[in-house]
Length: 136
Image (cartoon, rainbow, N blue to C red):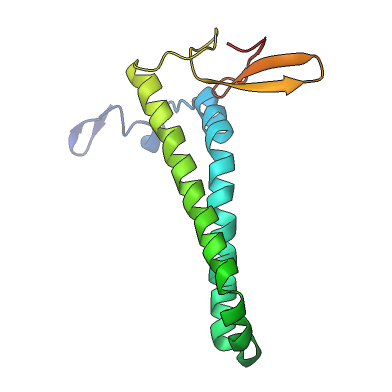
């Protein structure tokens, strides 16, 4: 298919009505890996922004802002931990896609987390969610 500027590139094909491929496995993987860190980062940030504005505009909250300063610092520390957690997961994905990471999962060779459940110890993959008996 020719466009006004010449031959159409494959990257522009979905924009112009061509076949669009969506990798649902990658969407599920990204949700599984990054939903927790995103919540740990966003919730304290939203609280900080909301109460920071309220404490500056409301005259009754000005005195309370000085008392809640350690709470605000704690929320900022939690948000920073969420950013670090998010960055660590990105680093794991980068190493796995590059081939440097050899995890314990039999399905995708990604990193597993070890858990103890009702029927004993088991390992759960962070990427595909598969479970295996015992710690590997």
